[in-house]
Amino acid sequence: MMNNTAVRIAQLRVRRGRTRVFDGVDLTIPRGQITGLLGPSGCGKTTLLRAIVGVQRIESGEVTVLGEPGGSRELRHRVAYGTQGAAVYGDLTVRQNLAYAAALLRAPRADVDRVLDEVGLRPQAGQLVESLSGGQSTRVSLGMALIGAPEVIVLDEPTVGLDPVLRAELWTLFRALADRGVTMIVSSHVMDEAQRCDRLLLLREGRIIADTTPRALLEDTGTTEPEAAFLALIERDRAEDGAGAPRSRREARERGEARERGEGATE
Ligand SMILES: Nc1ncnc2c1ncn2[C@@H]1O[C@H](COP(=O)(O)OP(=O)(O)O)[C@@H](O)[C@H]1O
Ligand SMILES: [Mg+2]
Image (cartoon, rainbow, N blue to C red; front, side, top):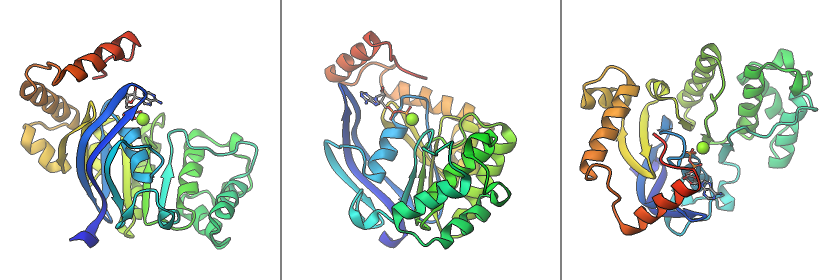
């Protein structure tokens, strides 16, 4: 069973600034599938992905990736992380950007050509990134994550700002990678992207409110659209919560502080 697990998180607690983002999150993510991490802005998606790749300071809990502690040296080549608005250099060509990533990772130079084909950018290899279309430059960002042939690819809202055609193209590429055995962990605040995933983790205010599949999500909620399903789950979660009352004095205090800073609850 353990061999089939890409990520295991136990009792994760994270504080960012004064905000308690996670207060005991448990989850597992299987290998070789696309797991979607979905939820509204501010619910903790980026923080969770950062914890998985080992760049988030955690208060307590365990994060295990491919059987190793998250962020450990041994995972450096096995786990790739595409941040929100991933860093690519506009004044370098596509090939130069990929070659730079390959140099940093000490990956074989041949990786650059492999990745150019995978993301369909061979015709643009010599073009400056700043001259590419939005969809093309998104594919460069993804290409940076594909250098070194990682076993786990973590992408933070990779489709944000893309038109529907480009979004569909990107999801087709994610599917091809998963079919090859790569574990894809992809966050989004767009619920209809749920349909593209094998597994879904729905996050609300730092809690996993559903760990499910697209089909089970719709069946459990009696809905036909993921958006409606998510709203139904939020309603259910609120009802279980005591009509949205804070679960603790600490939470009440934190919510109050969040409001004062103008970062109120985001639904
Ligand atoms: N550097 C930070 N300092 C303080 N609070 C932060 C910081 N980064 C994120 N947060 C807070 O942590 C919570 C989760 O943020 P984040 O993980 O970025 O959510 P998402 O990616 O789902 O939009 C939010 O309430 C956010 O305001
Ligand atoms: Mg985010």
